[in-house]
Image 1 (cartoon, one colour):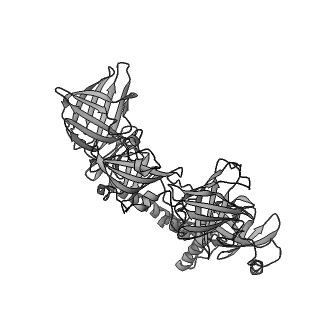
Image 2 (image 1 turned 120 degrees about the horizontal axis):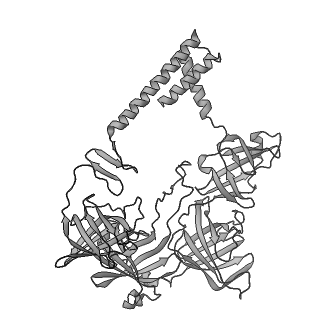
Image 3 (image 1 turned 60 degrees about the vertical axis):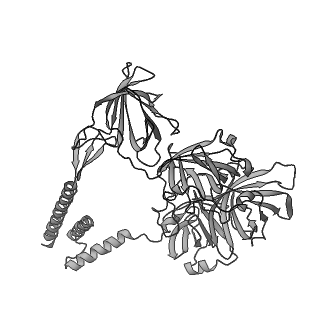
Length: 605
């Protein structure tokens, strides 16, 4: 701010030097600077920042709202809250547009004809209640939870034709923003194949009617066919009505039961009967303190609800931005490019089964990412208080057969650690020599010496190939004459791959190998699975009190941080540097002010 004030002072002095402004007093200089700042910050007639971007509307396709203009409509010339006057240069006329901001994803508007010689107020008064209501949907949009849940059977009317035998289906999906529609008849021709479409909810609001806006997708739709639809819905008990538009506008539906395309829905009560008839059960209590876990592969996140009877498996997306919850955000806060994690499975606890193999088994009613709902058996084994093995059995429509032993043949296995896990000191610190079981390669295994949280594997082969692999220690536990160590690659972000290394002690040496029994992935060294034989420690690990470079090229020593650059030199970064930088800027500011004062004095003579 001080620098900006200095620059404005120079501009003022330059202006008075050329006689544009009189030098009367300090107050005149300050007022000039204020006027200049206001002039440069003024943006005139502009659209709200969170409206700016790409949108889709029926009949016009994709349009872009800029800071001061709208594609094919014109340039903003006057504004009164949500009323805008736009000038169309090509037609030399003005249009009034009146907007209603329904949700983050959807804006609706009405507009007047493009006219000449009509003032702003009169132009907007030409918009009546019968004027066409246009809908703008953001491209791309962030999906929102659908306003109703559960699976339904439905009959539908397309115009005057009714299709009710057999009933069509509306299946809920693992992702609460998606549904799968299965239309059993189309166009009045019963022999035509059934139509399956995925629907994603993009906007919900209430303007007297309960409104829903979304988009259909499916293999049977052409790539250029936009299937945005507007709906009015109303549910009571296990039944409901839904009315849908026939294009991307919200024209047509008059109520939940009156419109060009209507559906009468009834909840499918047979589908999850065993789940509904059982009292709610809870997954293991050791999940109570930590509700968010990640798989060692780094691909999935497992989230457990507070009531402990539902968990979700979703994709782990590195760098995910949070979705704003209301309309009070600005253009920077709204992540237009946001990627949402796909929910792969939702599991609802049905009943607890007696555990086997030192694991607890739970019957669960599950819904997957293809919108199929079945029963599956979940087997959870606690290895340590922060490390679990979870097996998800194969799907079965019969709840009584879901936990049979054969259902775990080909089960999906997850090894889980808390989503917020930090490296910790490694066990058995020291420097070890080793030889590879499957080759003539030799090397050193350095545990917790250069960095107490890291294992460094140095390999050298007769072919002159050399490599260094570094992993970070997370958790370990002892079992018989073995130590199991959970590690991960030292990378930034949350999507990191983890490995289980087992140290098996013997008479004169120790075997170290990547163990597939406690991790889904194996650690590769020279493109081979780690499997080495250690000798006794070549040297004890001596912790260095001075600066040590770790794999992420940063280590800490007291209040000082040593950063190792790519060139290998050390640069001391501490509080003195930031203080020196501030001093330098202050000196530069003084020089600027001195120059400005000199110019001002000379101009006054």
